[in-house]
Image (cartoon, rainbow, N blue to C red; front, side, top):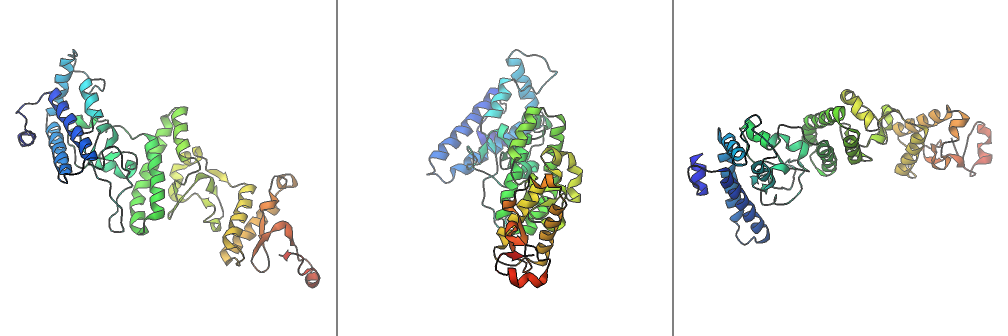
Length: 365
């Protein structure tokens, strides 16, 4: 640690108050640099000082000594709980922006980085510990939190920063939305999907664990983040919960989706977030409308035609009472030319010899 001390111009022994003073000076320099960028080397100087301070605190036994000193100086001589987040020293250490963090970078085909947003002093490469997480968490929180640009060895220091605790579920939920947005814009899907293969299960596992112990208020906060948003990974894109059911026709994609085998282990999470057992009649009516809008005047492909026929057969099995709830103004069915038409404008050709007579009076199926 001595080399770090010398680079900061410190004596061989540094007090808890001295650590806070240096942390404040790093934040002050970063804020000045954010408004005055005349010195291109200043960012490097700030980050170098931040890394030196972190390496000093992370040295074996240092954080323990600082915490003990801070507790005694504030009249607390107990050693039962060394990491006390009510301690003024630890409060300041977590609130001040002094940690070296990853820069916001532009993602390219050859440079896959998790989604990040510029916040506070992150464009300088500095952030507060309370808004930062270690490198191993970056793919599950980078859109909402800063990522440490180096490593921390001290378990005590990690506890000081609360990194031993699970991430807030709202952060994980927001990260899923950021990943979905990134999926729509990243031009190398194979590389991205390989990363998601390990990231997505971890996110879902964190959400599942959260819901098992969360209060109704905490649960509602997460559900509000995910409501009507695409966050469920189906292998090639993200979909919203209302587009998925545990039973669905396979050829309904990309309009409706069935829960995949890989997602069945998260059944409780999916149900809690609104995934149903089956789709309703109204869903299939909307599906026919979506299919019609997609096709326009073009004929349906064999797969699309199978889907349209499935919809017609499904709706034909409904009882008269159930049919009353169906919005027939949005129901489209295929004609014999495989084009989609509003159902109420069509006639059923059960007498082919009459086709010529009714020709021009509506589409036939």
